[in-house]
Image 1 (cartoon, helix red, strand yellow):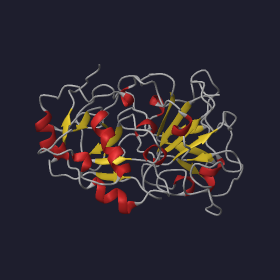
Image 2 (image 1 turned 180 degrees about the vertical axis):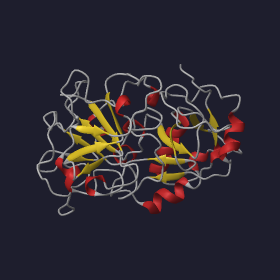
Image 3 (image 1 turned 60 degrees about the vertical axis):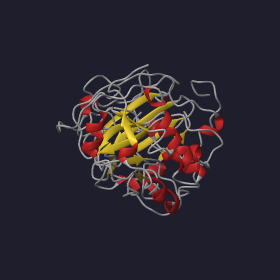
Length: 349
């Protein structure tokens, strides 16, 4: 049972990315034979790619967590117009997700999943060896070594370039393990990553100030993804989404880490909110697709949190073969940076 008592069955440029102890059973280079399984369905080993946590009523982080805050009535930052101007009001939104290889995959595993030691090569001092109070290691399933759909970028074992995020949720202990720059080093026979962080999904624990995570802002990635199970499920989406801009300037709460000092740019942790009306119309209704409208309503209520440097107004979501780019791309293109306002920097209720 998870901590909350419920039964739970990218073009963004990552500037900072982010253990017991058993390596994958094979000593060979990762292969691409076989299939990883259907999204939302367990593999033979019980690993679930793109697990549907929402249908079980799982609460991803407490309701008062920064990812889950209702900011519909929060004050607008006095410099909102200047920040939007820096981005460019005409800049269209783009879904930084879709069917493979687009987006960031995530997997659910049981509490008995074997822990693998991860060697952190870029930010070892700001990385977690494992979950607090538990043996060191990350529950990386063998599927990540064998198949293409488990690490961002779509290469078995992670490949040699790109953000290569790996997100694993221990559904029994309700723990989130995230690494960035993840790859299997065949020469050293070990998993390596730039950095890694572990989050207890039942608490509001924040990274120490100045620390990174698997994300440049020091935030958890999974809670800010646009997920297929939520978009096509029966309920409203009740959290903010992760987005990127080309440059950033320092950081503010809830972020803990900076990855730039560009004058005029937003700080990491800044939040945008889709306006309720623009020129007398509701921008969420520019698309007639009900699922896309649901995404846009979440942007009006919970907003977008700036989490990394990348392309302006790219919205991060889960890699899932069920997405239809013919729906996603034209719907997102109906929204522009000018349809948003900046919530007062560092605002807390």
